[in-house]
Amino acid sequence: MNLAYYPGCALHGSSNDYEQSLRACLETLDVQLKEIDDWICCGATAAHSLNQKLSVALPARNLALAENKGFREMLAPCPMCSMQLLKARKALVEDEALRRSMSEIVELEVRGETHVLNLIQLFETIGLDRLKAAVKAPLGSICAACYYGCLLTRPASVVEFDDSEQPRSMEKILEALGGKTVDWNFRTECCGAGMTMANEQTVLDLSHEILSNAAAHGANCLVVACPMCHVNLDMKQPAIERHYGVRHAMPIYYLSDVVGLALGFKPEALGIDRHFVRKA
Amino acid sequence: MISQSADFIGQSSVVNRKNEAWDCDHYDPPHCSKYNMSLALESSKLLVLAVDLQLVPSHRKQVSLKPESVFLNSSSVVPLVESLAHTQICDCYQCGKCTAGCPMAAGMDVPPTRLIRLLQLGHAKRALEAQAIWQCVSCQTCATRCPKSVDCAGVMDALRQLSAERGFTTRKQQRTLLFQKAFLKNIRRNGRLNELELIGEFKFSTFLHGRSLSFLFKDATLAPELLKRKKFHLVGEKAHDRAVVARIFARCMDNSLL
Image (cartoon, rainbow over all chains, first blue to last red; front, side, top):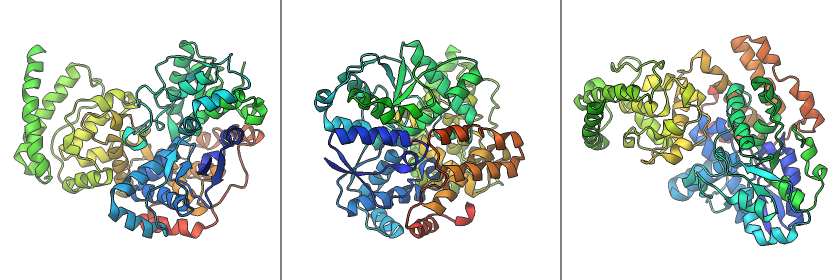
């Protein structure tokens, strides 16, 4: 399987542990990622907050780069990137005048033809049966709270993925790998997203509630598929513990970490040793 | 209380009918339009009811419903918000579902439902000045759950853009805006985000604005931890064709805003 790969800034920056583990998994599963030549930032929250046109143009440039190389599918493992790409794609598909003006703005013809997948969708495309067959070390000791956060399932009309209130796709993958999952309340609540720097208190408050709820429902780890969620729940966890005077000690895994563990990789090969919160 | 609820239910159909009429009409500042004034009266009853039902914490400042006139032309702001967000403000029937699901509503000066109401009533300046639009975390819950498909998260984006462009943000709200401006400047320059540069620029600009030394050095201890984990690159990645990124920026926005 060959597909275009849009890593986004986070996976080439402070969330390079996410890229490490997903590359390890996908190589084993015979998926070839072709990184898009000279991709640019999707603009993220800053673009959609401050300039609507720019928030379409930046992802449109990346869509055009992929399309012009003939790719029909593209992996964007960061939900912020994939939502931005999908939102731009939807707008472009629906509006011919916008397609024309955006093609001029981004200096490449853009049609909005490339499908954008998140990491969960890629694992679904590979197939749960194939995943199951590739398991070398079943996840017996894992009892995970699958955490979707905001942008994997929202806005529903844009991302068109799973159920925006009660998603189950990550649970199905975990269970196929021999892990257990818990039913809990904060699966689609927000962790504070991009407020980590500008408004830290928001992140501490929201993430503390998520960690507390997961623990209260018997989870021994959280599984995420978003670099921002990982930063807020893992890197900020010591700050949350200091602020609230509690001890969470909740390991936060990327979905590709737990898939990688089940495929028989050592934690170091997946970058798990570079997380802030270690398994107790 | 019971009679008030009955009254409320009875009137909601009237409000809806008026909204239909409003739909095909143009937006006038409230003092120009008879039925907008009557909507304002209806709204004050709704607010009283909301406080009674404890939907709105009583410590929140009540919105005075006197029409604004001199500050800015509200009639131009609402269509602008609607075209930026691709949504119809007048579709909202004030059910409150957006506020009920909003993770930030408890601390907002104007929660999402009322922000939309301010726009319906033509109080654009109040909406543009609200602290709430900078507290919003863009989680998209409001937009996803709205029974009338009003893109409330998109309205928040549009209000942030207009508030920033027209200089309505107050000093207290500056930090989020400064972060987002530093972010955009960074990608305009590099094509991709350089996290270390972004942090430096953001800290420096907030220091210039607020002169808070403690904020300048806050999180400084995280840097060596991130370096140890190879999560920080001292020299960040850049796109090769950065000139095209700069041109895209120039075609989309007034560069002097950054």
